Length: 174
Image (cartoon, rainbow, N blue to C red; front, side):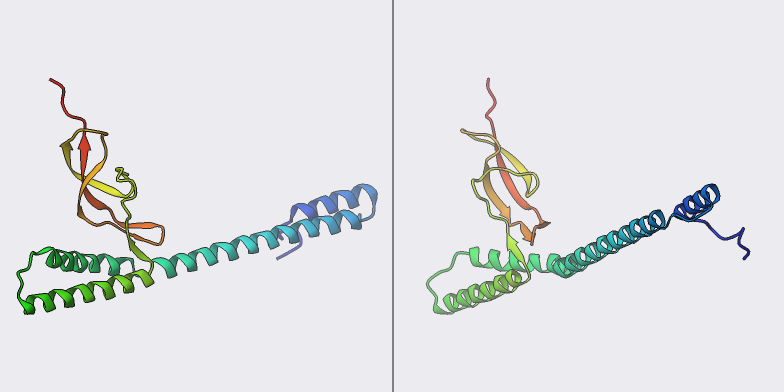
């Protein structure tokens, strides 16, 4: 590649123009141009490092997303089994206690992975956290959660599954 074919940077162009006009190279301008190029490269490297750290953190926090989605129906089934009314039989009482212990251990394991059920809080419908599957006429404020049909879950700060809820609506006026 000859001198004429090499790419020329803006700082080299300024140097060449200044040298041809004055007959000498202005070393301060050349040093300042190199300093600016260095600072830009340093800032780009720092930005890339921060992006990489964020991607690694996201990968670590959300790596089990698909696996967690598969486990949520298991929790639902255990909760439904616990909701079944029992008679006074001792075997059924022990069975129920076993299911309760299993559910507690399972919830603790999910908690360690950063997965937690959505808290209902004030009982207000939030479309970012809840999915309304029924609207029921009710006295009082509209958009109150009347019943939770299926719990919702968050993984760290990300929605894993919305809560399935029944929501109140204002009664029709005749």
